Image (cartoon, rainbow, N blue to C red; front, side):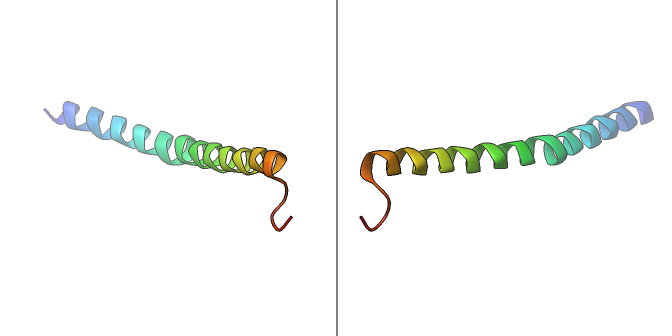
Length: 51
């Protein structure tokens, strides 16, 4: 029983580190890049703001 708890704790730590070190920054970059691309495409078709 103690081995199961240790294994689960190790898996949870590994999952947390993967999510916080890899997935969160990658998701942030993807979201910001996608928004920037969207704004860029809109400005190509509609012109810059104020014009």
